[in-house]
Image 1 (tube, rainbow, N blue to C red):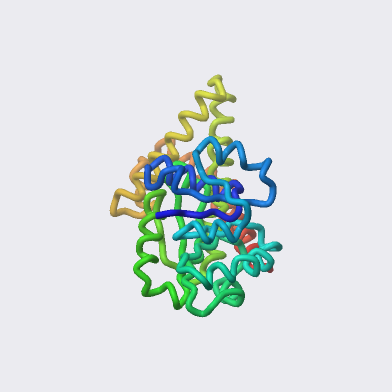
Image 2: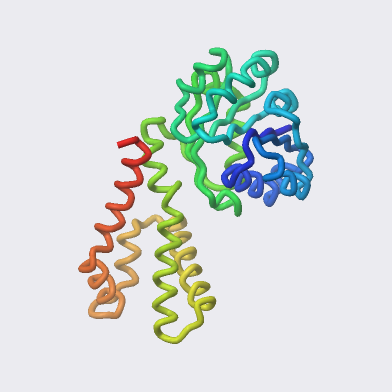
Length: 266
């Protein structure tokens, strides 16, 4: 399978890095183009990708094309590549923020299969989470299953109605930044009590990673697992109550609410 990327920014590179790390694709299977060659030529050369002279060539040389450009230039890019899509059966995967399937489809033929996705940065290490929604032309397409299978190589996947994509942005797209802040805050406490920052970060990050994995592996809610850690009258419940009194849960809800509202344009 030949895979194209129109746009080679952070998220596109995260997907590429994840696919290469899991050996789902080889660098020579990739065809890339973006607006400024000097920004991605070294990266493309490093991974062995083909650098296309323009966006239309990416479509012409690829079976699956990832659209990873900024929203403000998306209409112009779609206009540029629409003719090539009409002349060959390439599959379009869009990760353009704020551009729904209807807006994408307005620039292409009705028979063009489109999969809208929303990945998070953790796909770079094959530990990501990606939401997806197909258009009518892609919903019964065997290639859709193949593309979803490809995305499953770099983390979890979930089918969601487009109306729920903003919620996904809060829960998975932006939340890694919140988790990084949480890890850093815990590590700062380690430093307060005499640990080096490097060691404190390692301890905190592994605790978070292991806790998340346990949630995924056990048939128990996060609240039940927290209760299992918090012995009656012990140190953990005392800390949990202190965090609750300081507004921990309310802060998490407020942060996610703000993120979701922003994505919805509210």
